Image 1 (tube, rainbow, N blue to C red):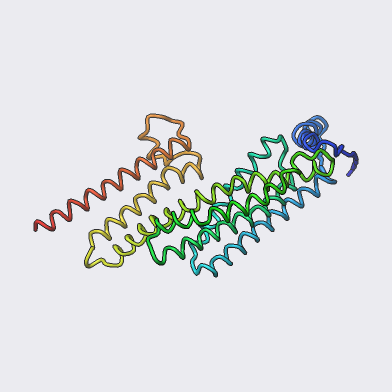
Image 2 (cartoon, rainbow, N blue to C red):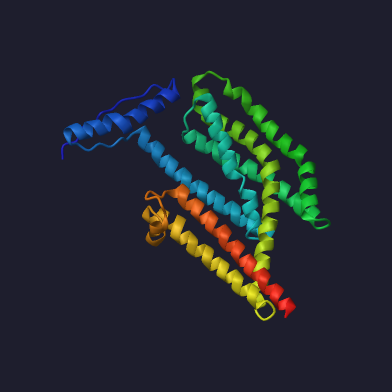
Length: 309
């Protein structure tokens, strides 16, 4: 096999331009050469090393999240409470992406390094807030505990974030060559932590309240299914609703995900031929609402007839 090596260096003065050149090579220039001359190509060197680093960083990041989750499970003695703490991580990524767009800097391996550091700080703030809310909830209701906990932890979370953000802000305006390569890390930390601080005080309390509401629904369902003699009709209707919603999901969203269209029998009843994900979601939502309402009406009528009898 004849092999031709083409070597070259990209100027390090402008990381954004270097990323643009690599993108043009991978998506335009090299594929065009492959199509014109029937040759295979492989982009190696620093690009190959960067891809290897990103793959290793992704595995390390997932293992880090797994370790954090297991540690929180041991601390909170719960499998669901750590989800509340870690729920904030994707929102911190939103701030980091916004910062890269605002500064016109592409995401790179240095952004991944900053993301890992940002995750630890955001989770630390979430742990402090959730722990405070749990301590207050032992003596009062959860909603008053959430309000008091968020108010009491405002200053510590604010100070923790501002000391890091203000300390790194001067690096954003540094013009030296070394600072340009560190800028993705700095942007990730500054914008991710700044955006995450607000979300820690807003999203985490909201998720705690949502978790309580969802927990009540599961408790009610387990209570209904565990007492078939005293509430046989409720148990039957609950199971019927669960099976119906699951079947409706399989016929709409599930079918679109795996086959590209809704169930053929259901598609024959629709006036349109091209049914995508939005229409499937609308069908699933409307069908679930109708099914739930129907089960509720049947249950209410059954209880009313039983009382009269």
